[in-house]
Length: 78
Image 1 (cartoon, rainbow, N blue to C red):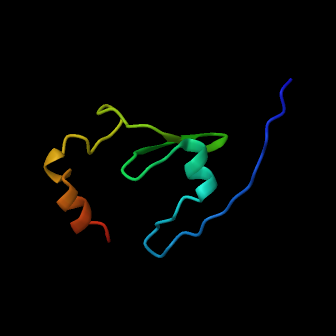
Image 2 (tube, helix red, strand yellow):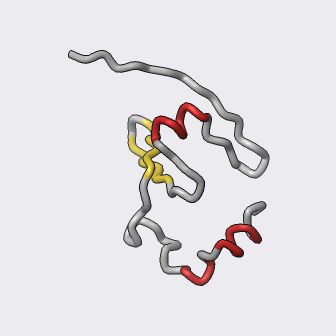
């Protein structure tokens, strides 16, 4: 049976409930700026996955009028 390499890394949550993904996590998931993340929550915990949510999973996907780069910049501090 192959061994599973386990590593623990930490990040801090800001007063705005924001956090920076540690470099080890970004590298492991091959996350680049603009990528979407999916949070899978179950009884065993929370799993972060790279990948775009489809419209059925994302309740805000229909609000495309707020999906421009200008909007991302304008609302980045919210």
